[in-house]
Length: 238
Image 1 (cartoon, one colour):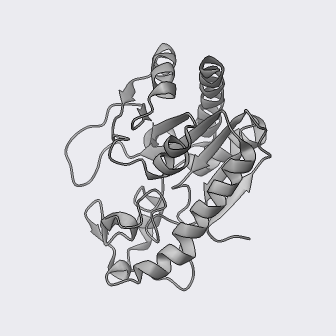
Image 2: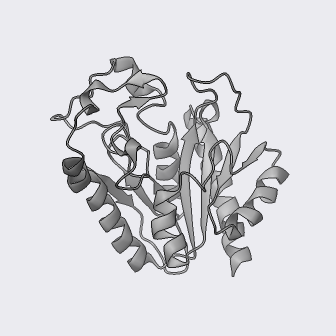
């Protein structure tokens, strides 16, 4: 089994595929982060709920998935190679002692580059019409008092094609939708910048609020909704 990623489902040219960069809280046995064990189940090491939703989309909705299998605290796969947060020394106010002085080049060679090399090859074979990028966000950061009321966010950088279609569709479902919120895709968009925007492929960047992604029922509900929205977006793009 590859320690960096796994791929579920068989892509069909002209179809939809999914990428989940922050789906795992797995830390290899030879790496010690030095943080309290309870934090490994919270939002710091992973995007809660995304792995389960990605699995359902691949299994039940014919949206194949490329899913990260290592925690972003080990190596953040959605960051540029020279980004300070690639091997984070702190996250949401919590120090990550094991990453202080860590060998960045070793982490890049072991995790980041294999992940993106495999992803590029997978997408080249897939020839998708739409890439669905799946993340989730905590309702409130420990380092901020600002509320995050959005139930789902749609992120994008320069290519707004899919976002402009998806936002009103999600709002029509009765959802509070963040337009490039709670994060802006103009700031945090590495994987989509590299594999979608640079290749001219349309993408839909989705952020789900984590108090709504906690249970199997939540996972199934979001998977069904995202499959429907993604299919409508892909159809509208053609």
